[in-house]
Amino acid sequence: SSERILDSRLRERVVSAAEAADLIQPGETVAMSGFTGSGYPKQVPLALAERIDRYHQAGQPFQIRLLTGASTAPELDGVLAKVDGIALRLPFQADPDARKRINDGRLEYMDTHLSHVAQHTWFGFYGDIDTAVIEVSSIRADGSLVPATSVGNNKTWLDLARKVIIEVNEWQPRDVEGMHDVYYGTALPPHRKPIPLVNPNDRIGETALRCDPDKIVAVVRTDAADRNSPFNPPDAASEQIAAYLIEFLQREVSRGRLPAQLLPLQSGVGNIPNAVLAGLAASGFRDLTAYTEVIQDGMLDLLRDGTLKHASCTGFALSPEANEEFKRNLDFYRSRIVMRTQEISNHPEIIRRLGCICMNGMIEADLYGNVNSTHVMGSRIQNGIGGSGDFARNGYLSIFLSPSTAKQGSISALVPMVSHVDHTEHDVSIIVTEQGLADLRGLSPKQRARLLIERCTHPDYRDLLADYYDRALHHSYGRHTPHLLAEALSWHQRWLDTGSMQPGG
Ligand code: 0RQ
Image 1 (tube, rainbow, N blue to C red):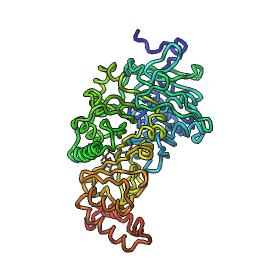
Image 2 (cartoon, rainbow, N blue to C red):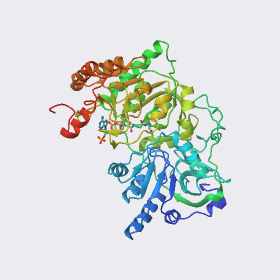
Image 3 (cartoon, protein in one colour):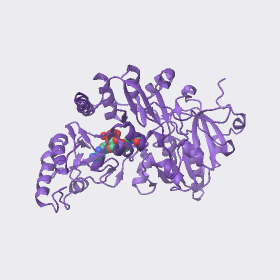
Image 4 (cartoon, helix red, strand yellow):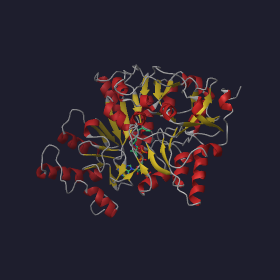
């Protein structure tokens, strides 16, 4: 049958989104599903935003603390931010309305490593979870919940929430059942055991989420698409960055430092990672694997053409066309993709064991290889650290990718000192821009600085950075990691004052 709610007890709890939202009270901590635009609830957040707005119109306060897996969509973060309904938000977000309020100082945002969220909730760091709102693809007869296109923190939310609202989304492919692997072996210190995962495609858990049916206070039927943003074709800079990186990986293979199938790939989302994935296919790599957070279009292409053997993730970020293709060929993908909870997809123990090759974007890097992934001019949040820290610290290779300039060349991505640090020099092994690749492994700070100036810095900024470095070498308080403190952030200040990091620009 086409019925998605097979548990008759839960079928009796079907209500409208507005009725479900009425069960959420002012001041609650609400944990919702969703990871990079997949598997987030589509209707209850909107109904909640309307409820909050009615309160505000009547002069009554109403805000919630909002926890998710990662970024969601306008129907969740957007609508709640617009009515000023969020007091505090964590972790990763990428919504323009939420970002604006965060940077205006009206919305508190805690940027947490994605692997930390579940355990920190268990530790009680974020207080009690009042309500969980979770999208699923179906409910089995025994009441267990088949996740949709992301798993994220859903296991933890269902375990810890006092009350649960479920959205059953008929748009989600029902046949996604069997693709998930929900691990129930996590415990709290001092009772933790090794996680028995040694290959990216190992299955160590269950195909559905458990939930005490007595906690489920409402079930809402929906039929709405995931965010599904279209992809732009890779631009010239992205293709150049990809070419440098692939050439490097081929060299590592020929030197015997990496196997021909490489090591499990982790890839961030966006233009550059997509170009890298396309480049891998074109360069004849075969039987690769991926242990990553998010699967985007490029990875589906690689699975289809055999470049990639199998992949592990916690969510998807697909274009509408890729999504249609995914649904059509679900049997093929189900045998090659495992979707996990984000505490496992991003687990330091596993990333270290597998030896992931980690490729992420950045805002800026400094002379010594410290990386800023999150803040523009040290104070404006762009998105968040997401999973980049989980992977950069623990992977076999930690690679950061970026164009060498931003904002029409008025900003250099290579600066004397980063204006915010997400990944310290100790967690960064390779930096690639369209200018070139700097392999920082085994180098001291001064050796790193020379290489980053020569290989990665845009010609418009190269002499400027070399000049800073040379003067720092002579006038710095210490000569280990030379800096001129009064000048270290002067490029950023100049941009704020004049609109360009170039003197006289
Ligand atoms: O802003 O849109 O206003 O023009 O930052 O930059 O060049 O479009 O690149 O989309 O790949 O994002 C680091 C943000 C790069 C991303 C970051 C401005 C630029 C533009 C976006 P506009 P691009 P991308 C897996 C791993 C952290 C999380 C992570 C990110 C906007 O990669 O969020 O890695 N990473 N997760 O103009 C001022 C600079 C700038 C700058 C870029 N130096 N100064 N502005 N921008 N560089 C996924 C998950 O964790 C879920």
